[in-house]
Image (tube, rainbow, N blue to C red; front, side, top):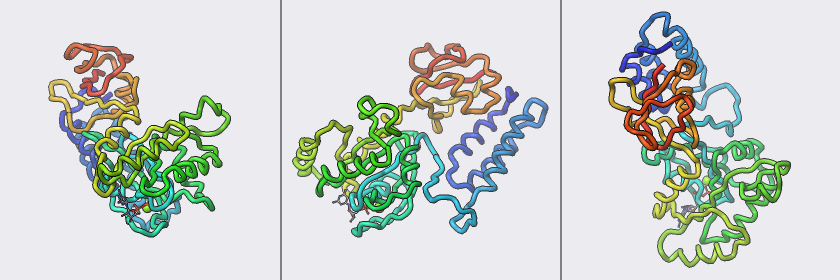
Length: 326
Ligand SMILES: Nc1nc2c(ncn2[C@@H]2O[C@H](COP(=O)(O)OP(=O)(O)O)[C@@H](O)[C@H]2O)c(=O)[nH]1
Ligand SMILES: [Mg+2]
């Protein structure tokens, strides 16, 4: 039971969580393991960490790997996986480029993107994964792409407001429906047998400046259905701040900051949990042993007085600071 872990552990654990590449993760996990004192009480924790390390070392580290995995099996990272979907040339790759650390090829030819590409988008202190994808094509859609869309926490359906956004939206939604993928707002009408329901945010791209307003209003006026929607520009970055915020809101997550007894809270790398999560859910994210042995917790934040003792079932709020007591 990792009751008396030293402050070094929490510091190293935070660095590990912030690591991005596999090799960086391996290095930081090795550092983390060194901070765990060796005694009976930490056996399980050390075994778990070593297992994690072994798994990381098995991971392919570069494109030259011999293991054949679908290019569409993108490993989830960060607080949520958000997939950019749409017809060719609407600016999906340009949006990934503008919003994340990834650098996809953006080009005037329609089929520049053949494989999905992930990137990390920062919203305040949260990292959210965005995945750029090949265009939705009437002839053939890779089953891997459909799976990626089904599993996504949120789909950004991108259209070009300077082109034919109504046609692009209709066609994309029809194509997805042919593969039994439907927007969340149709759930009540179609029922559970119709397939998978996904949350879609329509992103009207190429709204470069104020003069776009007219096009955008025309676009919305011509739609027969209400869509959650935003106008943005990848090129001028207009309203990209609103897009980041909307994506965060749509993911329905809260940020919780951990604090070791007698230490200041770690306000840099929050744990992200879904709305309605409890202290026990947070403990499970930190480590299974915390979950098993959790007795109480102290919480600072919403709906509590500072440092209030709460039980495992206490529901957390965005921004809470939590000190777990095993
Ligand atoms: N004016 C304008 N052009 C854009 C914008 N976003 C992308 N483009 C252009 O649209 C073309 C297609 O962009 P790309 O990102 O490759 O589209 P994708 O096929 O959807 O990935 C490129 O020539 C981009 O420069 C935007 O916000 N405004
Ligand atoms: Mg592209």
